[in-house]
Image (cartoon, rainbow, N blue to C red; front, side, top):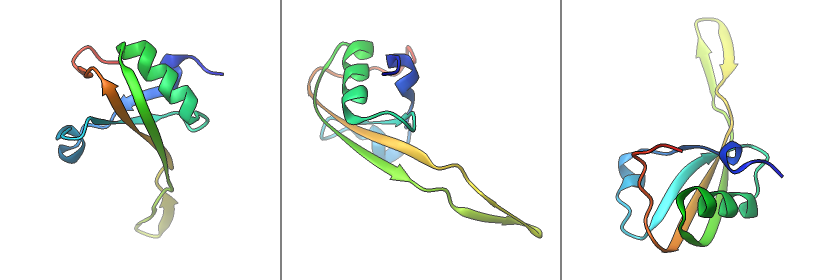
Length: 93
């Protein structure tokens, strides 16, 4: 098991994820982390109660630059729904 601060890499700060009408927060997480790791990390770091966690694996996209082919990094994203409390991103993770 990894540390709570190693599991959560960064919050996803997009316009859609910051609306927060349904109480869902979005985080970039470590590639080896599981739902239970994310749940424990969010509950410990932000002192809130988590009701559910959904994880999305996004593959890297193929990109071309002149004659060189490459690929962007694959990433893992966690959608965390809170049952009580809110998260303030100002202090960082």
